[in-house]
Image (tube, rainbow, N blue to C red; front, side, top):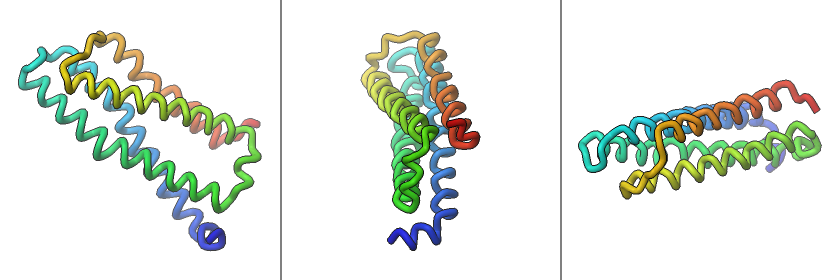
Length: 148
């Protein structure tokens, strides 16, 4: 199996990158929807529209892309276990755990909006809108520069 994975390693890596891009697109857009959703009166047509948009974004883009990124990343580790010996990879994996936690919080907050139970302000979501961006920048720099 490892020979097969090594033979198609660049294809797997390409699919991993595509999945990460799709995941990040959703992670950057979902909190923006939350910001707009806060401003829509509960029960209004606009609020109900945001609920549909948030649910579909999470279920059909963010979650599948996250699973695909983990799958293809895991296959790359299987093909090349020596990646675990790099310090930059440990940092990247730690930041990926944080990103997974942010993903979980976004999913939780989406459910609160679904139930009309959100109590947070648009400023709160504006701050959280930047968290995936900062994590992404550091993760990409670690993967490209490999500083340690």
